[in-house]
Length: 306
Image 1: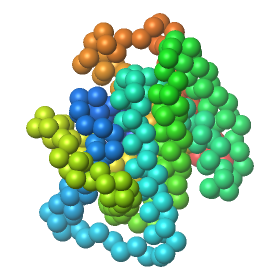
Image 2: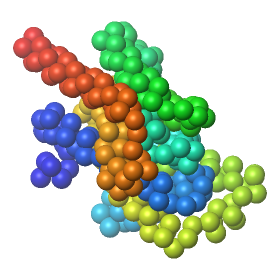
Image 3: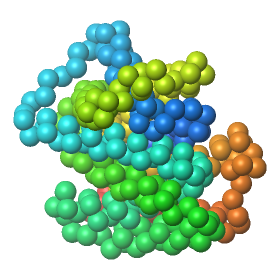
Image 4: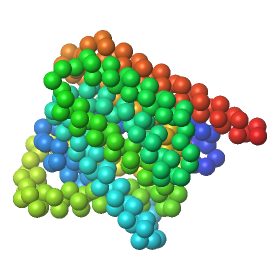
C-alpha cells in the first residue's frame, strides 16, 4: 500500500505527508532526550549503536542484504555525512541539557535559511531568492524567540550549530539518495557516525563510563529512540528524499520544533511554558512553511502545463 511504503507512482502529496509524519516522530526525540538522564555523548553513542543493530536485524528478517558501496567517492560522502549526523545529534542533545526542549527546537527552525545557501553550492544551480526570503522569514521568527529568553546564549549557539549541521546533512543526502537504497545509505552513515564517536570516546578514555552510564529507565527510552525514532524514521526519510527537493525537506523539518514544543507542553507542562513572544515567533515560522507549500504547488503546476 502506498501509505506504508512510498514509491515512484505515489502523488507528491503522499511523500509530503510521509515527510511530516517522520518530522512528528523526530519532534518526539527531544522529549526522549530530556527524559534520558545520561549526557549527550553517551546518549548518542547508545542511540546509534542500537539503531545499527535494528537495521541489521531488519535486513536479516527481510532477506535484503546491505549493498556494497560502488565507489570510493560515494564511500567518502557517506562517511562524511555520517559524522555530520553524529555531531548534529550530539549538539542537539547538548542544547537540550543546557536549556530545554522548546528553545533547542526553536534553533532548528533556522535550517531552511542555511539550506537555501547550501543547496545551490552542492547542486550547482542558481540561488533561488524566494527560498532565501523564506529562510530569512524563519530567522525573523527565531529572533522573536531569542528576544523572549534571557541567559540562554550558550544553549542558543549550540542549537544553531546543530541546525547548520542538520541542513548540511539533508543537502548532502540529496546527492546520495539516488545512488543506493535508503536502508544501505542509513546503515553506512550510522556506522560512520558510530565509528567516529567511538574513536573520540576511546581517545578521551570515556568509553567504559559511556557503557555503564544508562539506568534501567534510560534503556527503555533509548530503545524507543533507537528503533522507532531512528532506524525506522531515518530509513523512511532517506527514501522520501528521492521525491522531494532538499529545501522542501529541510523546510518540512522546521516543523519539528512546532510538533516537539506541543508535545513538550503536553508532557512536561509548565516547565516548558514560554513567553507569548516565543510563540509569536513560531507563528512566523509556520507561515513561512505554508508559503513554501503554496510556492511548490504553483511551481509543479507550471511544469506540468509547460
